[in-house]
Image 1 (cartoon, rainbow, N blue to C red):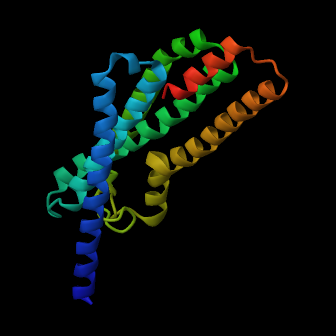
Image 2: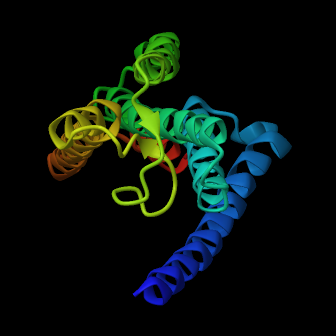
Length: 217
């Protein structure tokens, strides 16, 4: 039985290492491309880079987590803090990308969309830091190899109900909300563009602007 458990652990390490390595490579290429070519530095691509930075940290945290020494509780908490915070950053900025695209393309208010960026920064970076800092300060982060596939997240020693609440507060609730909001904004964007095209209300210049914004990211 212990042999099967050990073998499963080794398989999990191998799969996590492979998937995390590919994620690190992919996000690195996105960030490097943005930095290398100034022409690519539009706000929509900036948001994509912010998502990539968050995903880079998630992959790095997961990779670090499966290779952490179990007894190193401080390292486990540090990995949990980084990974959890990065996950929330990714959820928030993905929603902001949907809001930005809808405002700039469907509503044709590019200036308004650009003005919203400063609020995106405050909420997108700040709120996740506050949420995860509260969890860390209250001692809720730690080792949990059951619900997190090997890396650290919410302390597995918490009672089941308390653990589930903190899992929702530090990740799952925001993840579900992000999926829901992104679906709404992207469906609204698609319907708005399709409606305008079918009604013939898009002139050539406006069509070019819409396509340039969509292709920009």
